Image (cartoon, rainbow, N blue to C red):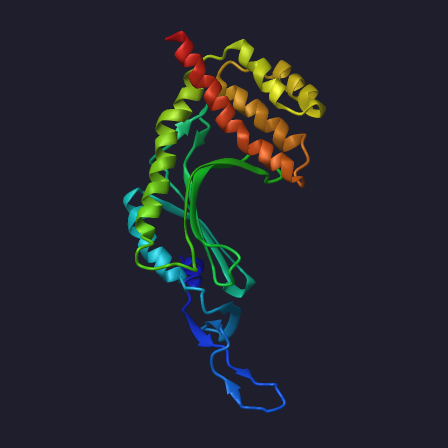
Length: 264
């Protein structure tokens, strides 16, 4: 909790005053169109922003988010701060909502909230299912809900409580409905072929080998096969890999829903 409180440091805006460098010097320029965002506890300048930038403090965001998160049973698992506090993020998980994905392996929804004082990101909330998939700390996940409040237009109308509530509701609904659907639906063998077709030719052999040694019986198994190849065989520093990876959940989910309709 001490680390958490350290991310809620006070900040203030300080006008950026310039000096007229023209030959006919006229003195200070009061309105340069810029301002400094200063961290009050250390007096460090976090950024220099235009006057259009509307300050949204970490305190404002957390104070609005916490009642919603606590009401849903959220537990803080991580807080991170970068650039002397110019960029901050927090993560909560919701242990009261969980899915057993097999063999007692439990998965909980999480929500990540982020804010910046240097314009690198908007005030945002992203919820999804994220997990470590191997011993080197590699993480793969899928996002089910997200919302943002832009610093340039922030006002009381940007109701962050609603953003948080909507995002959490989205991921909870997915855990309660979509995940059980994948876990409980027996796979149509033709859909294995459809998944193989989705992969680039350079990685279809890897997927085929994995499926041979880990025969998928449900659509959750099929999703795990796809994510294994994406995380272990495809180049992680290539943007196309991440774009491809982001399509896996929606593709497998659609195959499962189509199979259920066909059986009805």
